[in-house]
Image (cartoon, rainbow, N blue to C red; front, side, top):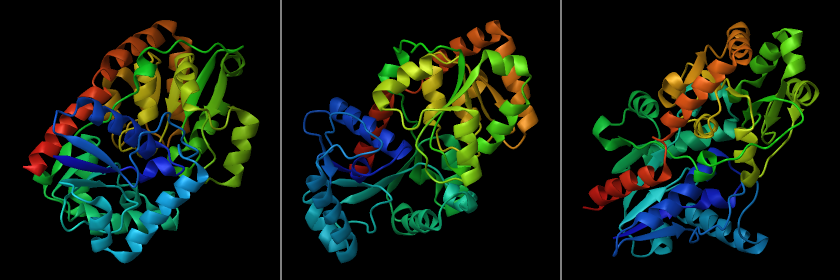
Length: 359
């Protein structure tokens, strides 16, 4: 059995999907049985390290492979069949425009925000996700949803039959479970993620500003992640009101996360929520939203708040920062809950999914 995974996301600037593809592909290969081949498209996808900001290949090699993807997308299914060769299952991403004719088609549904909250995305992203849903998701023989909440959203929003979608939750890199805290001069509350409207940073900044002066003097708000797209006022406030680290290399994130007194993530919607699961794996207490997949992923291991309420977020932060015992308890619960999010488990369930699809 030959399974070809679309690894195009590894060649471009990407956050959660790139994280998923990198670790998932490596673990699929590690657990494949004799006679099972896990291939990559448009390249083998054997990246030595994860870099969200750049391709693992040279500029020339990257351009060549992205050119192949562009050409196949222009020419159609026959060109895709030729590029894939003899493969039994093709697992597509939203950078693919056509379904293959020979291989069985599968895909992962990461989130439905382009349908639920289109105003939080660029027009180009909304168009691409809707095209992907029509051309790929609705035609696939089987789909993976990264959380049960995402599965329910796909059934409701896209009209996909429930039996065609399997919930297989994503994993957390082993480095987070073993992370040693990075030391900083001052205790800090951490946010990690791209700076974009869906992440709801304006509410976090308002909540932080409303904390009593003593807490803000004792703890620093540290934000890390690339500037994606956000109002200029939010960008300015992040730089002025937080310790903004910009993009932090993947190798440094586990230590930065483990060193935080608390992790805060007031996102308006997440398909899975990698930063929350990573903080839990590192034993860091979490404050996050009570919407989308976040209650499912965090469970009782986090303080859940209405992400549109600065006062509720501020109250939760105050409660957590005032109580060392609560921080210790939530950190312990989070580490236990995160044991459910191992890449080995995700890959094993995914391989069973592929075997069933391949017949």
